[in-house]
Length: 453
Ligand code: ATP
Image (cartoon, rainbow, N blue to C red; front, side, top):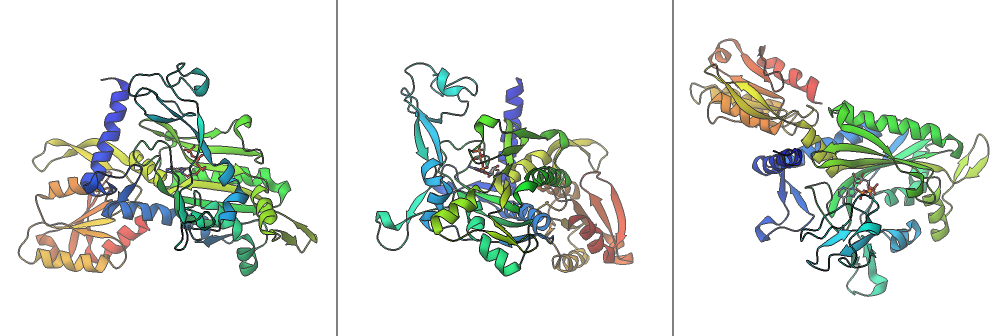
C-alpha cells in the first residue's frame, strides 16, 4: 500500500470511529449534510468542552488574564476598522472544465485531471487557459439585523473572536483595574465562508476559537512574544500531544501583515500533512489604533508610575478549538493488542486521550447481572457522577466492554464482582497499561479524580 493510502486509511478510521462512538456527525445528515459544518455528538461535546476548559484554566486561572464572552454579532464598523471588510479575502479560481472551485494560494489538483498548480507559487504555474483568473472573495458571512433587509442593516457573523476583545479593552481594563502587562481571553464561535472545506474538522465554515490578546508596553514585545510561544506549545505537550508531531513554523517576512512584527504558527502533523493549530502574533498596536480612529474613543493606557499615556502593543495567541479537537483525537488514535479472557491476544483500537480531556472518566461494569451486583454498581455510579462523567455498562463480556471503552478513550474501568459484596473492593483497570488493581470502593473517587481533574 502506498504511504498516502496508509495515511488516508487512518483518517478514514478516525472519521468512522467519530461517527460510530458519537464524537462527530455530519451537520443535517438526514438532509444530505451541509458542507463545512459538523455536529459534536455525546462524546464529542465532552471532549470539546474538556479541551476548552483545559485552555480556559491554563489561560485565565492566573492574575494577569481576564476572561470575556463577547457577542457574535458586532457593530459593522468593527469590521471596517479591523480591515476585514476590505481585506479578509482569499483568491478564488474555477476550473473551466468541471467547474470545481479552489483557493488559488493552496496546493490542489482538480478532480477532472487539470493540474491546478504545483507548489506554493501556485498562481503562476497553473495550466494556461484551464482556470479562470483569480478573483478575491470575502470570507465573512453577511446577514441583516432587524426586520428590513437593507444595506444599512447589514451585520456579519464574526470571522474571529479577537475583535470582541479589542473593542472591550477599555471596559475590561477599567472594571478590573489591571496594569500592563495583562491579557483578555475568549472562547467562542467564528464563521468563515471558506472557499473549500476539507479534511474533516480542519477547515470548516463554523468553528470555535480560543484567543488571547496580551497587552504590553511596546518595548517589551519580543520578551512576551517568546514567552507566549513557549507557553502555548507546552500546553499541547502537557495535554498529551506527541512532541514529534508539533512544530513551530514562522511566517516569512514577505507574508506578514504590514503592521505585524513577527508571527509563528504551531503546526500539527495530521495524517494528510502539517497544518496550523494556532498562531502567535506580535501585532504591534494596529487594532487598538484602528478602533481609536474609527470609534473616536481613545483606546489608551495610562501608566501612573511613568505618567505616560499610550496605545499598548499586543501579543496574540489564536488557537482553533475545533482544530485542536481533531489534533487531539488523531494524536490519541492507536491500534495495538490486548489479551483476551482465554489467554489469546486480539487487536484493539484505543484513544490514548489525556485523562483530563477524555470524554468519560470512568466506566462501571457489574461482572454479572444478578445477585445484587447491578445495585452496588449503580450506587457507585450515582456517587461518582456528582464529580465527573461516568458510564455504566452491563452488556456483554467484560472484555468486550473494555474494548468499547478503549475506543472511547475512557482512562479507567471498574468491575464489580462477588468479592465486592464480601469486602467492598473492586477491580480498577488502566486503559493504557491494561493493568488491574484491587482497591476499596471508598477510594475510587479519589483515585480517578487525581488523574482526570
Ligand atoms: P488558515 O491559514 O488555516 O486559513 P488562518 O491563518 O486564517 O488559518 P487564523 O485567522 O490565525 O487562521 O485563526 C486562528 C486559528 O483558528 C487557526 O490557527 C485555526 O486553528 C482556527 N481556524 C481558522 N480558520 C478555521 C477554519 N476554517 N476551520 C477551523 N478552524 C479554523
